[in-house]
Image (cartoon, rainbow, N blue to C red; front, side, top):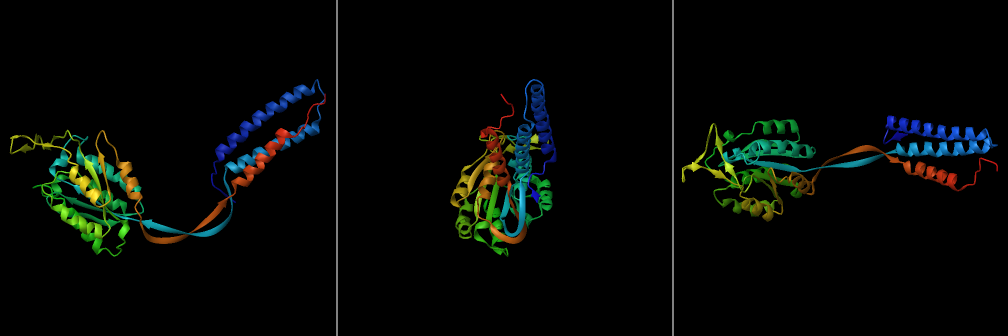
Length: 321
């Protein structure tokens, strides 16, 4: 027999509490027996009945499983590319400690939710680079997350087309081209210096690749630190202000039937993002046989309830009047 909830301490303390309470109950009858004639056989019958259904309750609580059988479990996985903007604006501090540091923290937490999926990492600004190919190894993935910083890529602007094209090419050349299991999580503040990314939307839809955009930042924005100073806007000769520009991110998500989400000190939509990705149909990556057993707690519970009901309705008098 296999126990689903083998909590020995809980069972022990429940038994102790029952024994103490029932000992008090029996002691009351001992005091009554000094003045009234008590039928010991009927008292014993009551005690046996109550002890029996209490034991059955404890067995049901432990979740007994009887019998085993082999069951095939199919393993389903998804391919997810996390595409991270590393332009200088990701150093802004409108999200503490910085936009990029918050992204790195959230990326590690998200990776834990996709333990059975292949994860990849692409970084971009004016150009895009493959930082981590699709892998099941979360230690490798997390190692690349730790190394993210804005000096890894050229920072002459932000181009959304390059990382989307790179992700599509990697999905297309993959050995497992299942249509419904491929997603791109585009993480950016949305500041883009062009609209040439629109040309790739049709190709992404043809391949069944959905974009889930994650907007990072606030509409109020903030200055952009650079060392001990600030980045200066050459047009105004004043500190540059970067703000969340959600329009492009929302457009990409809507056109590929994905979703748009935000993170900031006020908005925390990471759980919604995770839920949206999990709803996508994954590819069958394999199957395995596991030993399964049926939980029979119901029968013990039914027997205990029957005895408890019998205890309540039967006129088992313990005292002769």
